[in-house]
Amino acid sequence: MTKFIKKFLAEEEFNDNFNTVDFVKNTLVCFSLEEKKPLWKLWGYAYNNPRVEHAEIIVLRELSRFLGSNPTKKDVKYKITLYATYSPCLNCCEGICKFITENKDNVIINLYISKFYNFHDYDNKISLKILRQHGVQMKMMDLEDYESCFYYFVDPNKRFQPCEELDIQCERNEIELDHLWSEKLDGNLLRRKGLNSAVYFASVDSSPDQDINAFIRLQNDTTTPKKDEQEQESQAKTPEKLPPMKDMDHKQRLKRKLSFD
Image 1 (cartoon, helix red, strand yellow):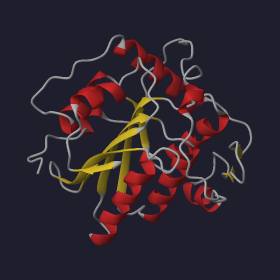
Image 2 (cartoon, rainbow, N blue to C red):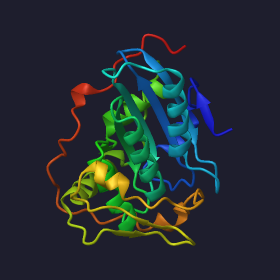
Image 3 (spheres, rainbow, N blue to C red):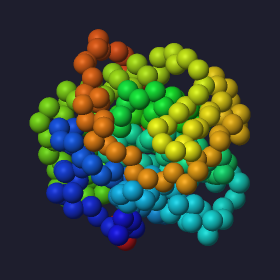
């Protein structure tokens, strides 16, 4: 089973997946949906189903099912928080954009990322920029984020023990993402290797509505990306430190839940 609703993640699983030292083939996404703090309406975690479905798509389907069976008033905003072991690939970015467009009046998404997936691939880079334009608040996880994720999804009574050089790798990841936001990417064409898998996005400078209408849908391409290809590419040299990104306000983090039931 790839999806676990209202289940705690084992500490060993957390450490094996949410670390910045070892290469991990699977993608793990912890998620929560809340309406009125501090209670969560829905929470859990999901793994990718190898060569079948990505973890992000599994989570989005569960969230869509919940929102569809729990209609809300137009002025109600759900806050969706995702902690992902890898940044979303092109396919998952498209899926998230579709989800936002279908629920744009009712959802806000905060995405915390542990590691980059094939970050130096042009398609993945421009996909993240388009995802940001659709209102997704993205942030590379720092120590505080790891502690929060551990508290909410593993064990609220234990202290998170960071792996070696966590702070160093977190800083590198933050620098990489800051550079991406300031980077000028030429052209609007996204091509992913594989049969019938070309995808066109509208200009990065256009509005989210224009972008989403410009998608040429992927044709039955739900296979799991080969993360082996990004093991070496994702470890870029550390450039000069940039100012921290301002997209997320740490004061708006998740509050303690009243119950884990």
